[in-house]
Image (cartoon, rainbow, N blue to C red; front, side, top):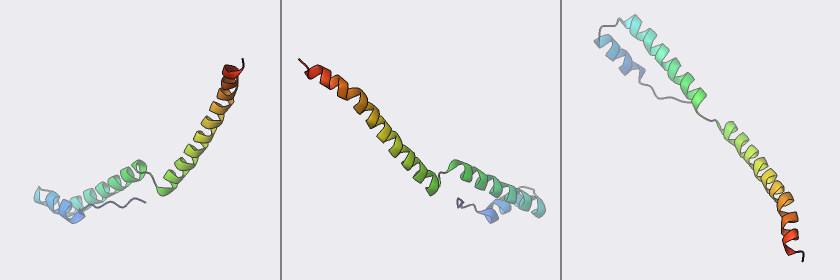
Length: 82
């Protein structure tokens, strides 16, 4: 879970200063906190995500190398056959 720093008290005070009731401010603060948390969770990669991508990238590298070797070896042999 992503940790988000959000000054809920300051946000609520600003809302109340601009005409919201304490109850309205509390509801908006909670909704804003939830929205930020959900956005951060869906946007940020976790350590598990990065680890999986590292493994997948390693596989792609090996497959690319093997494909290159399969194609390049016969080509190089053909160049040196006189």
